[in-house]
Image 1: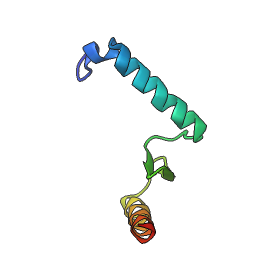
Image 2: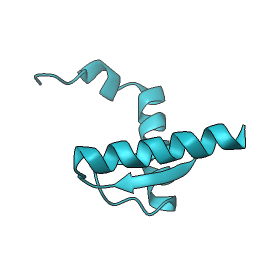
Image 3: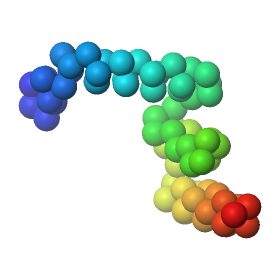
Length: 68
């Protein structure tokens, strides 16, 4: 398959990691791709305009810096 590391697909560690990420997505009710989580907090899910992504990332960074 072009662009896919087929050896990684058959690696048990990769399989376990992918399943763990899928379970986390279900727990966080993530249904859109892409989904962005920063420091354990959902920023946004699904396709967004660039300016929206930048705004969320800046707000999250500011909040994180203020908490530190």
